[in-house]
View (spheres, helix red, strand yellow):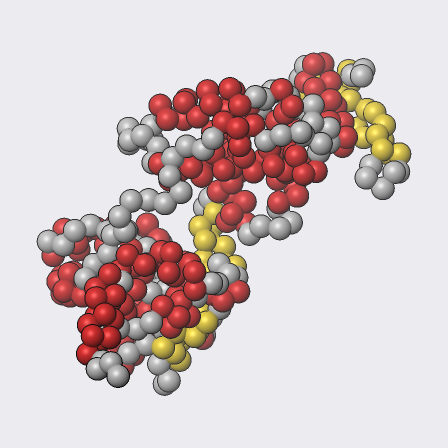
Length: 357
């Protein structure tokens, strides 16, 4: 595995042959290394990725895995996954051979994670710890399935954190009315109204254009979502196929949106209805919550609040699932079943009213 020095460029390079996945013999050349060992290491890692054996380094496995996943996952998912790997997995496992990582190594990594804190000094949340564990486990599962690794050490080590957060936060109708009465901003008032009375996701709201809202018939067409990736706003398909849906809105919301439209100068059909940032929605949500005296919730909790309202109004889970764009009614039931205890009592009371034969 020789490396060569380029006198003119004053740097090292590697040049070698390899066999690609089609069986074709090819030459590879890579320039620009400051040190000879860097050129040799790059060649070694490249050949490991081509061979895909379980004794490759975790760094090589990650490169193979991410190249594969980029063809299958949405950009926002890839961005989040890369961030988790770069920050929490590569620094610990990057140079280790995949088949030499044991359950004991995974346990030690888990213990280190549980000592870590965020930029604000808070420990990593139980749900985030769980996501990190499953990210690492996903890498090992990939190696087991496609690269001959005998066992996933994460399975033996066991998981950490929680798959679900604690009690769900939401506003009752009375709390929301107190909140919205305090909102005097001409843009954020309709934003919060749409989020609360439709239950759409904030990314779906930010992706809405004037073409997407039919005020004559009171319909919001959900066809896309907006994700912030780094410094860019990326428009993509909604979360799941069933997330593409038509959401009907009440007449009072139609009238508010008509008033909002009147204040916008000559909008184009494909202009965003609400050209604001996700962070600014959260900031204003917190500020107006403080002003109104209601508890603080997340922006996504407005979606939960919408469901709580529909449950209280007596709508069944199937209709709620369709309105939210859930792929499976099980998602709705698993997420919101705790909102139905009183409905069970109402059901029994109704049954008790029936006179048996």
